[in-house]
Image (cartoon, rainbow, N blue to C red; front, side, top):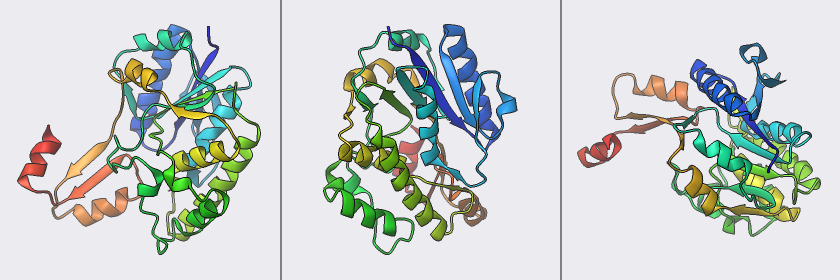
Length: 266
C-alpha cells in the first residue's frame, strides 16, 4: 500500500478556490491527506503551505512535492481547475504500482497547443519570454527538443528514484524562465513551461521519468483539465484579450470558420 499525499496549488480566481475545496472535501472523506499551496490558507481546513509570493509562478508547485515527500512516499499533484467526476479511482491509486521517479499521463498533444515534443514548441529566439531560457536549455541539454512535453494537470513524484539534485537544477531553470517572463512584460503570473523544466532536470540528474499509459487509462474518464474557451470576435475582444493574456486556463480563439465553430461546440 502506498502512502499518498495529494497537493494542489491554489490562487487567483474564486473558481479555483471553489474547485479545490470540493476536491479536498471528497479526498478527505476517502482518507487521503491533502496539501494546499495557497495565498489564502484561511480558506481551507486541511494542511496548507502559505504562498506569500506577490509574483506568482507556476513553477512553484514543486514546493508541494518537497513538503509532501517529507511525510509520504508518493506525491501526486493535481491542478486546481481539474474536474473530478468520479472519486472511486482514488482508492485504486493507493495500491497502484507506481514507477520510480516522476510519472506523467499525457503530453501536450492532448492540450490546445497540440505539441508532443519540446522541440515542437515555438521558442523563437526573438521572443523575450523564451530567449535566455532556450539558450540555457541548449547549453545544459542540447537534445532537449527530443523530449516529450508534459501535460501537468496530473503528476506523480515517487520518492524512490527521485534524485536530490533534481530540485536544484529545476530551481535554476525556474529562475531563468521567471526572469524571461518578467522581461517580456508579464506582471502577475510567471513561470509557465514547468513541464519543460521537469523533463530536462530529470534527464540531466538521471531521475527516472516516464509516461504511464496504464495510469492514464485508470484516470482518463474520471479527471479532466477544464478550460474556458471564448470563440469568435466582437467589440469586447481586445479588452478581454488583454485581461486574459496571462491566464493559461482561458483560450481566446479569435475569428473561426463555421466549420471550426461546430467543432468547438461539439
